[in-house]
Image 1: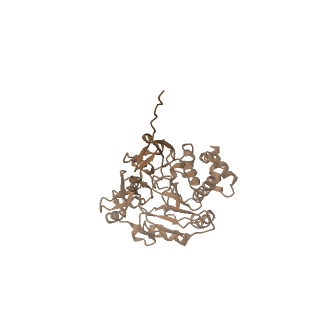
Image 2 (image 1 turned 90 degrees about the vertical axis):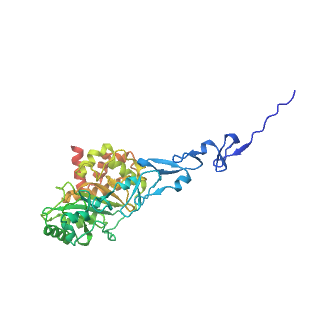
Image 3 (image 1 turned 135 degrees about the horizontal axis):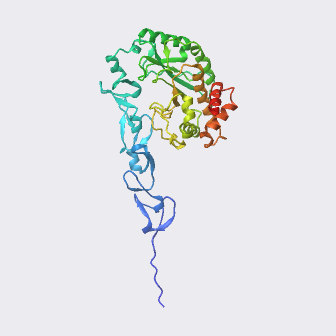
Length: 383
């Protein structure tokens, strides 16, 4: 009986996982052989490739692209996110490329045509400079109030590692330069070099009080000088356009801790707790996004969110309504300090850190450290 001759099948080895496979079953990429499981289809050019990279596309969705397409990607100058050149994008006020999300933080002035940051919006489609040419702007005449882009070298107060910086927007009740100037001098007399005053496009006849970074105890000491005796012409809570923002240093915060904070602030089950604490509902300046999870830390979507993650050195809590009441200001500062320490504890799981009931228990255990926050938590739990 004649032997059946078996045709020898050529074998190759996958360049990625070293699996042996028939040459006809391999996928050739750039002259190299790969098994099908080690190859991918680029979601941008649709070519088969051996390695992919995650970038952002339209609508801020993640896509996997090949090395060639990644080389053609753009990097947002503001948030430093890498995104596909096929995605929508724009420019910032310096003419630099920014992603679609960050481009929403800028507008084109109807008067001068310049691209300006939303903080420079003066109303009626004008930037604040062009608005000044149309209407009298008292803040320009008050040399105690710096321009909106003013940012001195930070001076740290207290012993860290946790530092907070506060931005408190205020309005002057009387629409006169004398009142604005008087209020500015009063604030600086009370708070000294701990703060500086800035213009803000959202204000009509006021200024923003900006502190240097400080610990919770230092904030209490410094702010008491002003909040214990306020000038009659200064307001904040009564105005819908005034907010209170608190920056916290990123330096000692892990991505996991920041992710837990992000999830807590945006959790649907915490919405009532957060809005009552903040004394205002979500708005375009501090938007709550209930789909936010820990994974969204890597790709912040924009500045005007409840927790702004677009800054390199800080995370910014934008939820609070402006306030000049001492207990409310201290309560906001205590919340930021407390939520950071609550979320950084390894024994507090991700699941624990989206439950305001667990946070209330944490505050109760540290009620001497957070007296104003403890009062609020107690009343909320009993309501």
